[in-house]
Amino acid sequence: MTLRVGVIGTGAIGKEHIHRITNKLTGARIVAVNDVNAAQAEAAAKGAGVDARVFDSGQELINSPEVDATIVASWGPTHEEFVLASIAAGKPVFCEKPLAVTAEGCRKIVDAEMAHGKRLVQVGFMRRYDRSYRQLKKVLDDEKIGAPLILNCAHRAPAAPGFKGDMAITDSIVHELDVLRWLLNDDYVSAQVILPRKTRLCDADLQDPHVILLRTAQGILINIESFVNAQYGYDIQCHVVGETGTASLPEPADVILRSEAKLSRAILVDWQLRFIDAFDVEFQDWIDCSIRGEAQGPSSWDGYVVSVTTDACVKAKQTGNIEPINIPAIPAFYAG
Ligand code: NAD
Ligand code: ISE
Image (cartoon, rainbow, N blue to C red; front, side, top):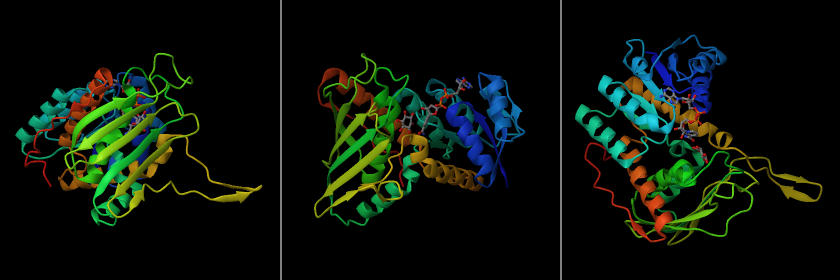
């Protein structure tokens, strides 16, 4: 079977996903596209060499008998509506982060999916598919450094054009919020946000960097530095201190250069390149699972938990206090 996929939102990342499904992966074909900018949807399909039908609305695309499964890559506030429509249509849906822009919206999706009786939703937390995070997780799961005690992490980007308000948390740190709880098999219980001296190299009204301190149910302390105008590169760090050793996220593979009296190695500058392989593995997995009729990967529940945690981090930034994170017990539907 070839999975017939429709894409809603053909901007930066939607276009990338159309290209990867068409030119790199197997088992799926892009048959439909939709964007509020119809000309752009048409151009995105043509640009990837795809002969896809351009739909007037996301709802029509989801409900079309020509479409087996949907990718939602439109703006965050539109995700909830399209994911709920996919569940109502009983079709698999891959939703880029965020699952919804409020915890309440995520919870509606969780409830609708449970009422449907079968998992249909995968959320686009691609770091779980990254080779280096998977290697680090294996070290922790195999207890090579005993129980984890402290995590020191950093999410640095060269610049963040268009970032306002709390976007460093809601747009970028959401990836850490998902991948770290997956890495540790643990959930967060509190958040604190500390604001260091501001960099002069960004908009005057943007706070950058932030330090986010999370505590997990097992008592692990996580320190995440978010620095989205770090100038020098896109640099993702994760260093775990355990009872009997430490483990660090491997650096992306690159040539180690000894030349002109220097020992050097390049640093990537954009997130797309850093996670390009992870996106490919993530989508191949989504296609294969959708064909088998068994959604796996980051679930609606994971999207919901990240949203609850994001809200607590935003509140902690405003209050300066340690804010509790109240995550309900995972429903049996999503456990395992
Ligand atoms: P973008 O602005 O480049 O593209 C979004 C597209 O959605 C635009 O073309 C816009 O016209 C379209 N759109 C908006 N509302 C729509 C609607 N109601 N119906 C149909 N189309 C609509 O944004 P982007 O950078 O491609 O981001 C899209 C989504 O992907 C966001 O949710 C973002 O957070 C997420 N994202 C995820 C990652 C990741 O690392 N996983 C990276 C970047 C973006
Ligand atoms: C972007 O929206 C992403 O999702 C990237 O993965 C992230 O690392 C980047 O900082 C965000 O702006």
